[in-house]
Image 1 (cartoon, rainbow, N blue to C red):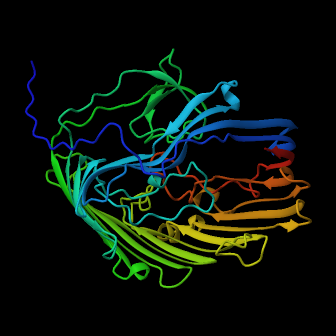
Image 2: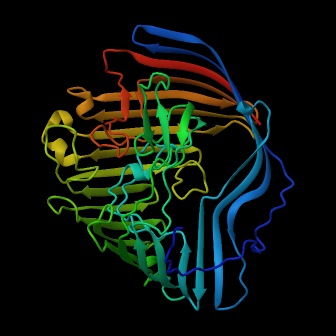
Image 3: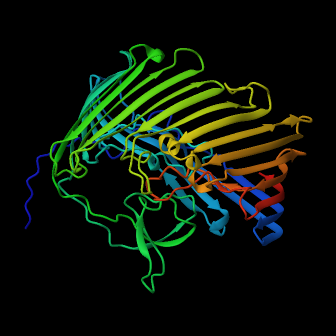
Length: 511
């Protein structure tokens, strides 16, 4: 018989919570969304010409059982209480186009937090505290969608673990939040890796978790391989053999400590945040000391300033390397700019060539206006327009003019209301890029067209695209953390020897 010596502090929260009054669960409405598109197009790729009609449709019928919102367990007006908070809770009965008319439960809870509060002081019970703060996160690429993950484009000076945070928070006193974090690399009951394989469908837009794994290849011949979300974040659409937990919990049993502080001494004029975290042994996985600092300011209406710095001293690196990154951004209504600098052994400083890693930087500047009168950037009603310029790995690019990493995008669209229901909206986008991928030439792509709505929920679109772009990319000079490839924004250039373009005429009806 196994015997365990457990010294633990347990906070018991009731299984059935009484939720706050805003947690209404009765939603008698039904949400129905449907869209159908008929299009005819010509797609030219080199000597290959593809053309014809295409019929597309999507629909969703949703019965909300629990409307998406945050839920917090109620507390009486007392200074000592236990609180459980659920973030973005949602539960629906859903049927979609690809479900063959069948309905199924669809729900999620993005995050759960539990803590004990005693006169403003608190003890977190769940989840484990973060032993890092990514204060120096670079800005998003100019063209992005829901597949973009900031974690794939950052220097992560951090370590993971289990633990708690003992702190004090007071919103009435400079929005103060200060806390001491205690962590361990392992827990007293470590879980094993999962050996259960199931089949799971990925639609091309579903992310694979860091500890989850799928099998890519032919199972019968054994020519494939297992990959995790660290290698392939968004698998192509299809069915895969799937493992929920690819690796066992660590069994190193080491400890760590950290400290957080955030406050707004001048309200919106000045916000400050600081963190420092360290492992107490070199045997801790990813043993390091990391710290970060951030300053934010909104000195006037529409103006936002931010400066951040993250640093990490790696206890296990042969050179005892110290790596870091820093960012400064400024945004005032229509205009914005930023500078990002990172040390050699980061995603910005590393290279996949014979050149040595080096400290490098990125910059951007942008002017943009939205057509919505209620938007802070609105200049002319109906006009969506802007210009964007950026340079990534600028110092590396200065060494070779052929590799100078310049990206420019200019766009414009103007919506003209012909009457209460009818409108027309011409649009155009142009991308110009110079970097190592395009060699002596530059990358050029553009699209232009017009959208016309004769009546509500009916839209006709005619568009010509010459060249193509990659979304969620910064430059071919920058390396993405999980997929070890270098992706340029302009994928197929107008100036390439192979012609790449397409014309599409479409009619879309929405419900």
